[in-house]
Length: 82
Image 1: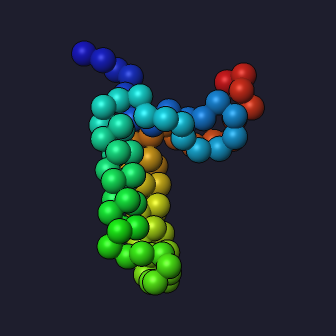
Image 2: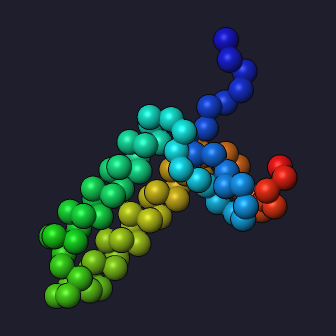
């Protein structure tokens, strides 16, 4: 039985935040984010409904950040040697 938790999103080597996913669940979340961005660009064209589009993108970014926070490695500032 593995004792180490498998993170969907590892911490970045430099800076604060998360890098590319390392599990299929993380890749699925990232792909869904991109697909929803594309669909939002078609349904809410930025040239006509900029504020609706920006609100939509903000909600998607908050959701992605929340998933990264819950399923990713705990964020902290890193300098590369960690």
